Image: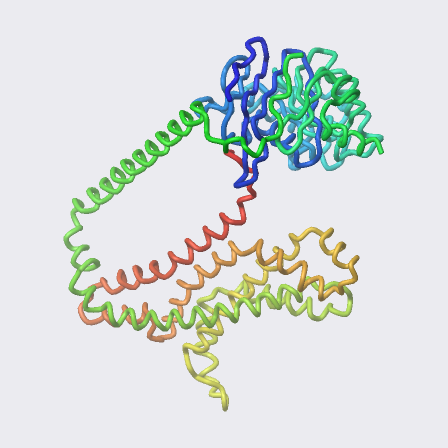
Amino acid sequence: MSLPTTPTALLSVRGLRKSFGANVVLDDVSLDIEPGQCVALIGASGSGKSTLLRCINLLEQVDDGVIELAGRDIADPRVDADQVRSRMGIVFQAYNLFPHLSVLDNVTLAPRRVHKVARAEAESRSMTMLDRVGLADKARARPDDLSGGQQQRVAIARAMVNSPELLLLDEVTSALDPELVGEVLDLLRDLRAEGMTMILSTHEMGFARNVADTVCFLDAGRILEAGPPAEVLGDPQQERTRQFLSRLAS
Amino acid sequence: MPLGPSSHRAEPSEPPWSPSQTELDRRAFRQSRTKRSAFISAISTLVVGGLVIWLVTRSAGWPRVQTTFFSWDKAVDSFPVVLKGLWLNIRIMLICGVAIVVLGLTLAIMRTLRGPIFFPLRLLATAYVDLFRGLPLLLLLLLLGLGVPALRLPGVTISLAFWGGVAIVLSYSAYVAEVFRAGIESVHPSQRAASRALGLSHGQTLRHVVLPQAVRRVMPPLMNDFVSLQKDSGLISVLGVTDAIQAARIETASDFNYTPYVVAGVLFICLTIPTARLTDHIAKKQGWHGAGGTL
């Protein structure tokens, strides 16, 4: 089952399998992402999109398969997971900001505690990042005082502040109302234009179509169809994909 | 296109999944790690334990301490009496345990009742908790155990064990009420809203929605209080009731050999350890959400 990985890829997943008890959530999943690319994972809830992202971030221990980051298998238990994670950023659907810390402290936590950056340096870097997501004026606020869209932008700033090689985004707009979705998607579009490599799971088909280089349709833990958005979204080959997309359209 | 569809739907004839060589290699590594950890912890336990024993046994006063506190003959001699005393502790602890839960839960519910009508109940419960949480248990034991029988009220028992138990219940129920209240208040208001929206009354909401969640959540701290109760039941010995500690004290009186106290201590530990492990088990079961992974 282990097909060779792609040497040029930043991330190369081969034959990934993950189950929770008897429930097989990911079954023989393979995926490549080149530097600067954007991959969109689409599919129904429970199809395995989030689990795939969590496996890539080593938040889950995989049952089998290879996850190569820049040519090195990170699913191997000999690999230092914290070191690997510090090279990636992840943003969750429910923001997962730390409510007891200010916005600025949320962003500076990892630079200061993981990367041992001096406070002043970490704060100036974080302020630049907060400015980048348009929230420099909220630096002293608590996450609970912000709107959902603002919180999610802080979460993105927190994930981006360490200049990760890869950004993972798990349905980052699903908890937001339509008006707030726009501000987050605009930000992601800018990051994409700046050459950030990202994998995102999403229900925003318009965004996937416009921004992603590759769209993967997941169903019951398998990638049923993958390719440029125009092919997968415009002319799906699998009956299941057509069914999923037509339900979304209606 | 850098990637293609990785696979297609599993055919019924496809063989079941078996781990790849890479995965088998990972498993072997994890297993060797587990073995190494077990080995290291065994060695370090032996070293630390050995060091403590060595330090204690070579101290100048050890022979004297050994005969006074760790006399095997005296231990065997006093064991049946202390064990018989422990039976009283066990009975007190079980009966008090039930009374404490009932009273504590009632108080907690009284304190969470809303609305002006219930003000007297709230006030009463608050005053009760303030009073009995503030009073040292030992003081309460002496006041009730020595004071009430002295009143010689007609029809009221003068059993010291009974009044000792009452003192324990009064003190512990105040603590347990606060634990229950914390649990009740930790249930998110949206749960109440959902329940009331279905037409359930305040009482029904409490009974069918709030309490089941609250009790489950406070199970570990409650079990902690229960462990504490098991050993605090020994405090009634100050009233002269022949429980395990009092029995041990009587045994020491004849020859000033304190081994019976050690026997009582060991018996109490044997009593509390199963409860402690049960607490751990419950806490672990609750803390496990299935998505924590390897973190």
